[in-house]
Length: 455
Image 1 (cartoon, rainbow, N blue to C red):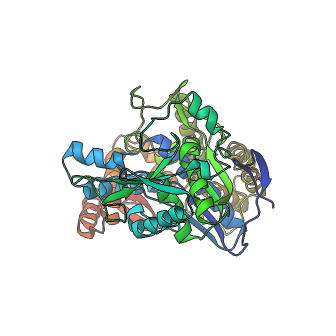
Image 2: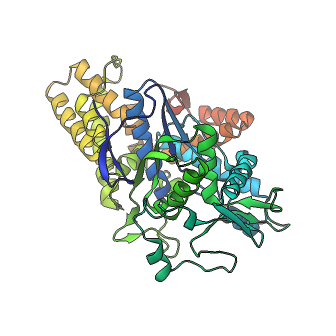
Image 3: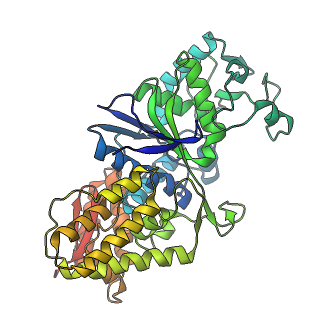
């Protein structure tokens, strides 16, 4: 079955052909770890989790990398405001992200590079660009010269001349062109920094991803993904510096961008006070409800988050689980994912269509409820989309007033964070506390489920 993906670079849907059928490569821009993560951060994680599953279903080996940006001005500012070490900020935020993703049934990527692990490689990357006259040193900064890259603006369909003419670009005297971007910036004594040929400093954000891709995968990867907000300037700048560093080789053959999450008719923003944090949402609803909501519209379109959307997702999952509870003791047989589900997802990750196929499968199942093959296919297909991993009776217990599932979910989240930090004593103490509450945990395939001790 062919996989067709919309390529942001060519502005059209194309049949996906990897460079090497034996090892498909995908890199997605991950979080900048300076605080709690919002629902907008969850959308690309879910979208590209679905794509990774689809690719693995077709190809023998898929290497999926999603980075952690752990050096950035936002992190420095957060540490200053909270009067703590940067490492405390990044560790806490990274652990929170891992915990959030686990609750949303987002599988871990094959590789999760941290920017600070590649500083020496970034310095070498910059040195190469300077030698090729694609970068220059000015007033403590090293900047990429966009005039040395004739295709600047192609990915984002922007003309550099138009961008400068009406520009919101901040003009600095040390730049030859207002659009030139920073590869290395100076750090003062109170800021994180590393020694370099240009003095003590730190890398520019755009440089980090290009360097990590080069070191992990090589010069050209199959797929580069991220949110629509990253197309310019982040991905545009990645294209430019990597093309020049790699002697005219394209950084990625496919560029994929997901639309933004909106509140009603406005974009989520701190200034509007409408940021939805994942950690708050998972205290109000199961992670699968959030995941289904995020998949309810096509990934390239903006997603309007609303109470109605959440309520519909809850209703759908409650209906599925209510039916499946009667068959909880019957093992799911090994069976392939439904072909219509695969076909829908192979058409540019069309999750709304795949969800509609799930509903059709469920209608057929209700007509033939004792058909274990049909039921197994339904469950396996939902699992493929990251759904129906909970034990039905546990899911339905969320309506039981005798059990405070929010407390249980919170303790499991704290245990997940402790395990991520390798603080196994704390993790074991939380497990024991839940056991005293009559709750038994089961860890399987990186997913934690629970049940009542009497079950």
